[in-house]
Length: 198
Image (cartoon, rainbow, N blue to C red; front, side, top):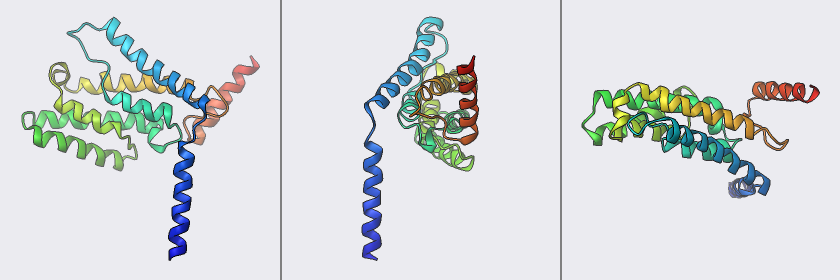
């Protein structure tokens, strides 16, 4: 039993240590991906939307950027999780706000807890999704007024922008490959080889 525990500890320690060893080039691509992903959304909000209009940049996109640009091999960072987790959580958050709008001590935990369970059931677990649900029930001003439009914009539209930037920057070098799903990899590599021949 002691031997098994020691071995498990050594393996865990090695895996955790190895996860923290990131090449400086990876830092560069993570920086560029996050800079452009968030930058595009912020640019659209500041240049194309009036102050009275929609809010396009929400806090949970920052947390998503950590995953999809900095931990690209994580199962929680994959496109299905990014888009599905945010959209489902936004739906939950808006629905809870419609049902229980004035009881924050009930609506906030209910929105987050239900969004977690829904993401687990649909295999779209994405931790920033919990923040997306929370934003829907705790925000004041424009977001509550949006109702279910919140799901489409800023949530879905922002996720699509982040995903497109991730697909570009996370596949620029041979060392980075995103998403990890083999079907996507084959499709992206086939397209990349086709572009090189032309």
